[in-house]
Length: 246
Length: 216
Image 1 (tube, rainbow over the protein chains, first blue to last red):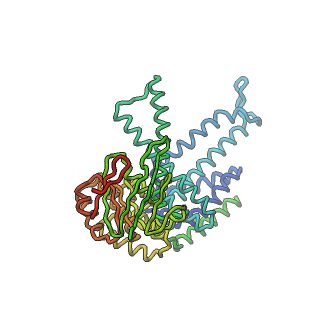
Image 2 (image 1 turned 90 degrees about the horizontal axis):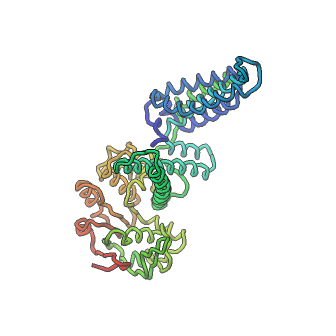
Image 3 (image 1 turned 120 degrees about the vertical axis):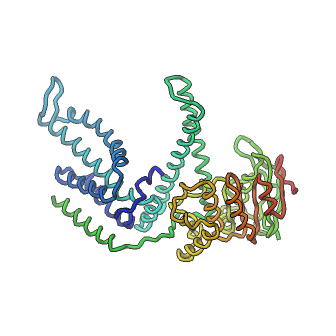
């Protein structure tokens, strides 16, 4: 499934207990998101990059994901340097680029990439099901975890339905042009996608009820902390403290 | 004693599309009942109504001699029933085959050790042991069908409802399904277009046509 493309693998991060990964993930992303230090944020990015390396995430897929994140950064780089007042760096007529205006998108870009890399390397290397299970073990509210899992399950349903309908359109010779016909086809496509996804999600839910689902996600494979988990947690805790002290 | 008794059951889909109007029928304990009928005649709808997954308009449903009306009644009935859905993709959703098969057992509070033992035995019977660690969504249609059936049978239900169990699967898979459910001692309700399959398994046959269920 789309949301689990990085979950299969044999790296250290793939075999770690998902509870440990979540416990490491949260403080690191909070630190990255809240810090405005030009030392801490690059250090955090370096940590996240190293973790992605340890997880042996395939380069092309990783860059594909990061490209989506950085697409939004382009807009920040276009607007912020010229709209934030501060020490002038460059002048061209009415346009003035400030040092503060460059520093801010630079920091945001580093933070966004670091958080994306943490997300891919830590929770991303576990299946959504085991993450849901781990969340319940970490005493997160059951309803919240159920909403999280169902969101994932139904997003996948919509994505599958979308792919199937798109193949059907292509098989019947449709290709998009700038015509009313194309707009109509897309309108029907979108409407039908929601109707079919809704019906399918009802069937999925019925199947869950028939197997006595009552809001929990029991798993056969139970979590057990290994030596690797403990060593990883200790190392990451030390690293976290070091970054804070920088 | 009747396992299923349906009295004056009526149901319509939104838009006043009437599916059943005062439907009556019963299935005795241990009966292997096959339901045939044209597409859209309401075979799957009937199974869903019996399990409370669709809400009837009127009439009564009795399972094992007890009237089932409230969501709690249906929840209890589901604990004794195995339901195989028409599309295995609706049913499979866990990350590995063995987790998917064990899901209903773990939901019932059975220990992981016992669940694993039952899963292993069933995988052996269905010859899907080599698929245990595979992702269910990536299996072939026939394999998905076997895994979803294993996920239903693992709880050893008293009542088994199969919705088009042989649709889209090859002879080898049908043989595997047959080999297992021939030995099933509970009550069975199978909706299918596959007459040969029904002939080889069922002790009684019903035909659903024009809102009526007639014994063949």
